[in-house]
Length: 91
Image 1: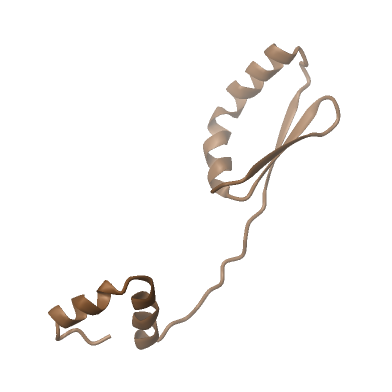
Image 2: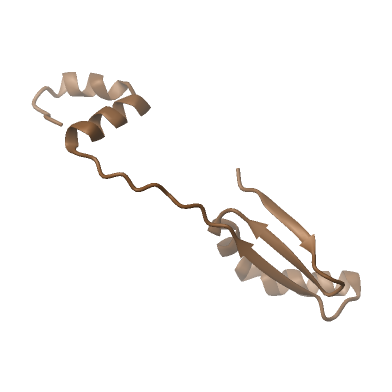
């Protein structure tokens, strides 16, 4: 689930904090329209929006073929069945 937090920063701006770049890429094309609408509804012509994305570091793991197969079989045990069906597959 994507978490977003909106906070007021003074009277003329607000901040949106998101934990994913997905929100930023989806919001940017519509930002001008949204801001125009908010300015119109609030009557604050100098209203500004700042988007902050908190990116999480992803752990990069290098697998050997056998270790990769074992990791995949923990996620989906049915992979062992496929290995039995296609017996010639070796890691």
